[in-house]
Amino acid sequence: MQQTHTLPLATRATDLVGSMIDSSTSLLAQQTHDIVRFAMGSPAPEAVPTEALAEIGRRVFGPGEASAYDYAATEGDPALRDALLAELDGTTDATSPERLTITSGGMQGLDLTFKIFTDPGDLVVVESPTYTNGSATALSYQAELLEVPVDHEGLQVDRMEEMVGDGRKPKVIYTIPTFQNPSGASMSLDRRRRLLDLADRWGSLVIDDDPYGMLRFAGDAMPSLHELADGNPLVLSVRTFSKIIAPGLRVGWVDAAPELQQLLISAKQAMDTCTNLPMQRLVGGFLADGHLREHVTTQQAVYRERKVAMQDALTEHFDGGARWTDPEGGFFLWVTFGSEVDTEALFEVALAEGVAFIPGNAFSPSKHFPNALRVCFAATTPDRIREGIGRLRRAVDKVSA
Ligand code: PMP
Image (cartoon, rainbow, N blue to C red; front, top):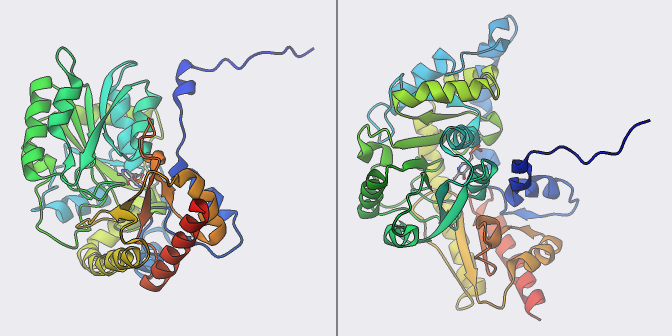
């Protein structure tokens, strides 16, 4: 007879917190009424270069191309690696073969990095608010999180020093320095330098997670932490094609010191062997055909227009009742209401009204942002943005009534 057992779960299973951001994809897929979707951080559907990708797909994994369905080298398919190295040459993210590892999206870059750097109980600094899929990855390796506030100049480096205090050192500092998710803030040059100095003093690894840096539509270019670090092995960059081509590809990369590359490769071999080869060939073809620069330039103009449309709609409906950020690139605005608005309660009402966003507390392990929310302006046309913000106004009126 079968006996009744409690499941022999690992302790770390209790540290798996999931992601409200990702869960919104299936929640929204179940809805049958019209919804303006400001929730997910997806590129505009019309921005996905489907024609070029279809044409490249026919060529690189079409009939007769069986080799494209084989296992790939763990560090990445040579065609993609070469095209990416050439693409990044001369940019703030320039890298070299012994530093580059292709990953299954940015998320895998984060997972591999936390896996090789985090022991249970290690102190990991995260931004507040932060991209909680990243902080959840640190938690899944049983890190102790320290949430350090972000303002319009990014991570408050002085506060970080104070909050860490004497006698402790963070093992890892996880930052999204450019067009941060969710706040849209970019770290000033001065703070970038001070962050690197402090990390150097502590011997902490800095994870520079930057999916949006190429999508600048205002202001001046800023050197990446990678460029400022000038080869310092304590700075590791996580990058992805999710926002600049399409997220379903699940292709990204990590730039790390050569002495870390083999560890990343070993960790990846224990996880998924290699990144999906047909998708690597597709992305490699897109780069080798010279499409990326022009594609990104077109997107910058589209996103600039959409950001302004969203800010104008917010001014029309919420002037005096809320404040919001003014990013120079990326996908998101961060909107803060008065303390009377609970954005988790607002979510249900707004969904019924036909608009979706992500509540602020989804971006804070300690839930510091009950009256804020994140809206993605990138995926929606200006007309639909105006409609969606109008619906949000009606939902706020309902919860405040
Ligand atoms: N980091 C940040 C800051 C992100 O916004 C995202 C995607 N939303 C990722 C990492 C993960 O990227 P990917 O979808 O390529 O795994």
